[in-house]
Image 1 (tube, rainbow, N blue to C red):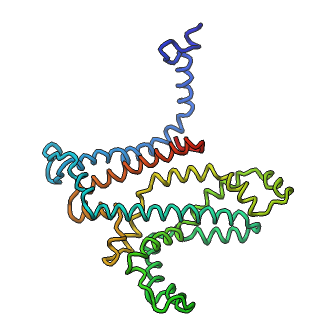
Image 2 (spheres, rainbow, N blue to C red):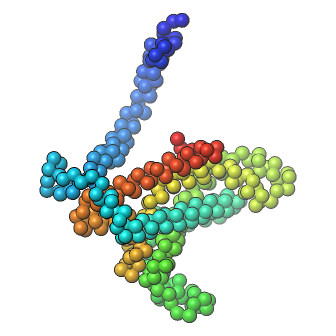
Length: 319
């Protein structure tokens, strides 16, 4: 058979296939040129800094050159897992991440389902706009609103007192047992409207004939949500869940740092705050880098595991 139409026994591409590949690249040259700045950004800010991971295996001293650094192997990693403060930080990070994940997913899906059921366009747009607005506020403003609302003379205590649910004001930000819930509620208030966008987009792609058939069969709105809408957006939910699991150690930094204080220190510190505390405040760059590497490795591992589980269950997956 003609060499230009087939691959040889080594599996190499034929001349015709190579020519088609270069023709395709040439036809897409404008798109390739447009992607160059993005690729450069990713390389410069996502891959080049990986070189700094070498600090985790050194007793890094800023004044010394790379060749003069003392290599210590896994010394800093061993210290991390023997340090009670880091284990406490890890506990806080995982707890707040799981709370944010559960509350964020459930509230966004529920709000999207309810918005999808609103037939009046004006009211639907109004509710969407109101729920989106907090997303555009910085965490500085959000934490200021939260702190003011939860103060001893704030609106939360005032309402609870008038409803006779409490006898005296609660010091919400002075007791650690409330801190995780406050962080979770703050994330929901700020992001729930924004998180519904992708679910509403997925719902708009569901075939309207399915709802018409359900109406003919006499299905209620709840039945249609349960048996049509939710299965229709199930692939989107799975993909977003996989991506969220990959960020399981991303509990946040701003809200914990801004709302935290000495009274709730054992409940508020996350890995990001730990890295800041040791990396910048105390100058222990090697220990801070080791904590950052641990966080990255766990995140990648959880992402791959979640993707593998989705594949095993026959669901949508990233890879």
